[in-house]
Length: 320
Image (tube, rainbow, N blue to C red; front, side, top):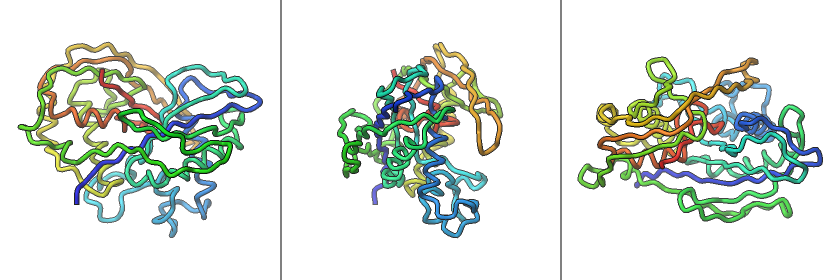
């Protein structure tokens, strides 16, 4: 059986209600927080029970999407209490905070692997969130349209609109063959230079510190960890990659240009009842070296993001 990595992308368009919308400059945490609370309300049968102790946990959509944990006997990430969530909310890169009544706010939702089948839950949750309201002032909105977009070609088709509130069965997922991630050296086209632009705050941890200078091996450690765990837990297969060799060779790739800066950002965690510093690196870098073997991973990483806070849209980069 062939192993594939599936990523589906959707554009959600919100229409501000009669009071407009007031949102922070970076909207990822606000979208994730409000959406998560509503998702639990519509999907959870026992809201007063902790997910880990709930007998319904194995078949619960909320538990899978938001409280996913390594199942007993998992060989990968045995020491982790949680695993990467199978979705990414990409807020708009614009930093405006006020939206007039009727004005549209568009953002992207990316679903990975088995989570693609849960799309209707995401749509219903955002539709219901519009009735609850979002932001500190809980201003209301309407989920206007949802469009399925091919993650690479950009081709798209509307699959939901407020006028009829029907969800059309349409998937334009990008499918990556596992062999593309671990192609033999003879099949790899040579690449000697690559530039990246970190478009949202990117948090890459190495040696117990968050990197302010993104060396290539630091980037690849984080990217390999994220892609392999998304494949294992949300697709059911483990990439046959030479992790040690890839990381060792990544150390020989030079960071020849770095025009990045650290951007501080705080979010409030209702779970921990405290404010959390979520700053990260933004800006452009250029790498030089033997990069051919890393290009499939870098292309996939553009979609699934890299580093901490990916569900909020952090760690978004583009190959340039």
